[in-house]
Length: 361
Image (cartoon, one colour):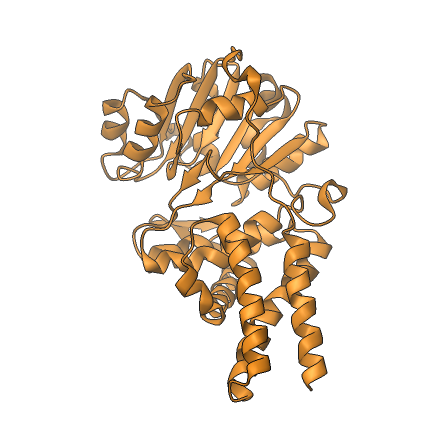
């Protein structure tokens, strides 16, 4: 029994390391100030009056100035448009005559059509630049014949936000590029919050209009870029792009992750799926063995070993709490509940809800 426990624990920890071995970050480059690209920042927004001031204020502080900032108002029911204008952004309204197509993909498409730049940077409204050189670093690392996508570093401010930790880890691992196999696995697509590409490449592949029926639009669009020989560069966003997900409470967090997580997992490589399954199993086994062993020393050792491995992965994705990470079986339990509900809504009910809208899949 003890030997089996040790074997499973070691296998699960090794699987966690294997699926999230290395998360590359944007390099500092000498050519940062030499880039002359005309960048259009395109921000799809629905009811984002609280998030936009943080993002737009951080854009104003950038040493590399974009050509324009477009906020695409997707029929917001708050002061999104007014706030955007106060910060000097141009507001584009999603077209009423095509009301049957709405949501983020539609907003991105309308924004691209209205943009004047030769380079497009699509940003979710809950993102912000932590440093004044963030945009310059992105442009310096961007290659014209490719696509650049960054998963932002999660900034935690309230305790309940730590329940996003497993999802954030698996978003990084699920893109297939950060495992021990590296580039030998095909990229799953592009990260949802950010996409940087040339204007010509975007319209050549058909842009977000090609993925109008996908709830995970950037994963699908990234796959199209790859198919048409535009490689997708994937990076971790620490020190370059940060965000705060679902700041309006745990119900908002539950709705946000359940709307899309099961859909996104379909693009994950089998190797990563197996590793993640073993990793998740190890989290439960280490916790259960600790309890049923009567909190023996070996069980505590195994629990603490998994905790240290888990903490490394958590801090790769965001500034998640060390204290709450110690109670990781609870975090994994929450993840499993949300994932099951997401799978039911996605594959059985074929309908999800987000920001007051019902989206048919």
